[in-house]
Amino acid sequence: MPFGPPPARPPVAADGYLDVLAVEDLPPGSQRSVPHGFERVLLCHASGSIRAVADLCPHALQPLAGSEIVDGVIRCARHGALFDLLTGKPQNGVTSKALRVYPVRIRDGRIQIAVADPAGA
Amino acid sequence: MAVSESVIRGFSSAVSPLTEALIEADSHAVDASLRTRGNHLPIQKKIPLRRYYSPEYAALEKERLWKKVWQFACREEDIPNVGDRVPYTVGDLSFVIVRSGPVEFRAFYNTCLHRGTRLCDGPGGGEGLRCPFHAWEWNLDGSLKNIPSRWDFQAVKSADYHLPEVRVGTWGGFIFINPDPAAPPLEPALGVLPEFFKGCPAEDRFTAFHIRKRVRANWKVTLEAFLESYHVVETHSDSLAFTGDASTQYDIWDEGSAHISRLITPLAIPSPHLGDSASATAAVDRAFEVFAMAMPGVPVPKYDPTSALSGRAQVAEWRRQMMGAGLARDLSPWPDVAMLDSIQYFMFPNFCPWYGEGLPLVYQFLPYGTDPNESWMSIRLTAPLPGGGAPRPPAAPIIELDFDEPFSSKPEMGLLSLIFDQDMSNLPRIQSGIRGAAPGRAEATLGRYQEQRIQHFHEILEKTLGE
Image (cartoon, rainbow over all chains, first blue to last red; front, side, top):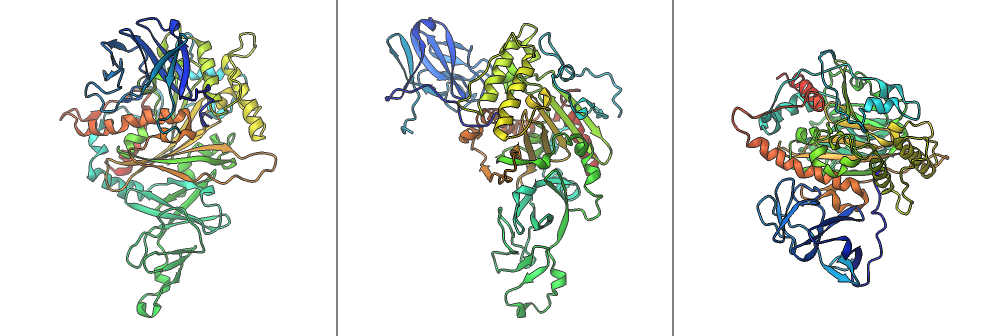
């Protein structure tokens, strides 16, 4: 039965960052969807920046992976919702809900994303 | 109508056969019920959309459906002790279901005979049914127990103030009611269910998780979203890698008095939509991952190409062993189909019991309040009673989710919360779209095979309402 608590997640650093991928595994122009418990995080290397967002469009809760990115804006391939990859804010009226964004940092050639709850919970 | 029309019964791929073929290939003996095919094909016609929002139609449903048919109310384990009671509320009708004896259940209109106060708002217990307004009180058999200031009600004869009672029937631990005193008994309305569930007795299970969601959609919109797997390709696209959506098998048994349908959606197999080159191995690996999510810390197996077993049989065998050990029950006779797949029955008008251990759920769909644009969906997860002489675990209490609360706010639901949230994201859109349909095109067009259970539901609804 697919009920139960989320699977164990890899250890998160004390400052809330989680190591997810080597930079070299995310070449410019590419995307990678990585599991994070029950959720998935979409890593995007676009316009010279590495961004991390939920791999789940808040409009119909479908995966975003593979969606087109133009000028830092991702367009959900299903129903056309647009989101700013940096802020997560919706850029058209398909949904008023924001896409979850994860702060990203690079350490020793590794991509790390901040996953800790802002409340520290 | 007999099943004679030439209907294309599902769509397969080179790596994803139809459900019937998967059942043939099962590594274990499969219960005859799962091999039995339906006996009814509904007449194809379009569904007028007004029946999903019209207050007049909802009023007709109240009078001719909810007041007249056998309907699923609750489970016996919800009221484990004598005196325990739960309300069963359907639209603005409400009944109180009471365990009036060790194995005796009664149901009454949930309204005080004094000035009309609702007697029972939620699960409770006690020796009597007592109104919170002036303490008029009834015994568990519905007889009048006490009226405070009895001297002031000289005209009230106790015998005339028995709580109005409605009929109760039980099967498999499920409690059904029928407010119509002239209705035939429950048994003929159950149709094939008692025979088909002999191999998976519902009375030997308990409610391990219970959640009820308020939905901004008509109760039929909500129900119908769960009667087909046609929507998986768009609504649950992230499940395609391991779900046989287009290869799902649908069957209907209509005996005149009983209206039962079933779907079997196979898992651990890629969607036929993914084509002939989809990975069957990836489907098996993903199924291992999904089923392992309920068992944190347990190593997740992968498809073993050296095994004599098929990929599906490997996942099923692993589940038999893991679940058998966890439940202290011998699951070794269970076929793969019952360990993996989604086997969902529907009994008109509001009841979906699932079969097997693949996804052992129970759904209930009800109108909510007086607004036909709102409904209630109750979801239970059941588990087999533990073996080894362990006592029956208590039923899980109901978790209430309001209109805007997502299932993902309940992390204990795991992956299922995303799946239900995906479904729920559609429902208000369907309701608002239906209301704004173009004149002359305000009707639904149903798929002949994959949406036949919805067609059947409306066939029976029309007969019941006399439309």
